[in-house]
Image (cartoon, rainbow, N blue to C red; front, side, top):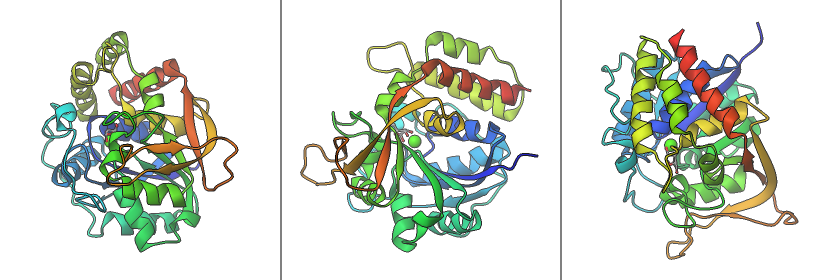
Length: 312
Ligand code: RIB
Ligand code: CA
């Protein structure tokens, strides 16, 4: 029996967060030890509920912990419900969750599990980085227990402004603190847009059978995404967060540049929320692995593999 790697997914579910969690759970090499919820696509009340329901529906035996309800500094003044639906998970209607959240807050659960994993933990963040920043504030020695830290966020351009991607835009101060303390693997918009799925990809996923609750949930998500997640001016749809999980499952999926990256968090800065990618000769640490190229067909095949996994 090959050993599994403990992982945590900090997320703001979220349609694409839901695919990411389903992909992680389907991977035999991962053991999801915790799912932690943060404000983001929809208010924390909903991301918390969705995180519980996703763990319950997918049959993930893990801690589900609740984190921040608002960004570190600026008010949480917008969400992405126009993209993810009022519930945050498209048209998916969950059964009432049969599991309870962990009594401890996300930042203590992340730290406890990092210590328990003895340096093997892979931490994913697919929402605003508020919980990760709070974990670092409460437990400054967190970095020594983290094996890898992979985010969906940032990138070479924005989707809220031309500079800022949503997850970083919502809490730029948290992102600034996190990028300064952890070696980030950044799966940004330049990657997730390049990995967008075609109509034919969706037709293929929707044709994959399966009567299980996870299968039905994936079909509902795909039906919603095919309609709702189009890239501007394109028939292709983007499933941002699953690309971050796929990048760790398949080491050949992404080509990276090692760069120093900081986050602009000035309230009045036109580029607030920008992940500023410095030139290759900038000696500052920690270096960020900036995703620069993606094998789109390989990602599409991996996502289809998730549908087949739950249809078995
Ligand atoms: O900009 C895309 C990111 O913002 C995704 O993680 C999506 O779920 C939202 O959180
Ligand atoms: Ca997300």
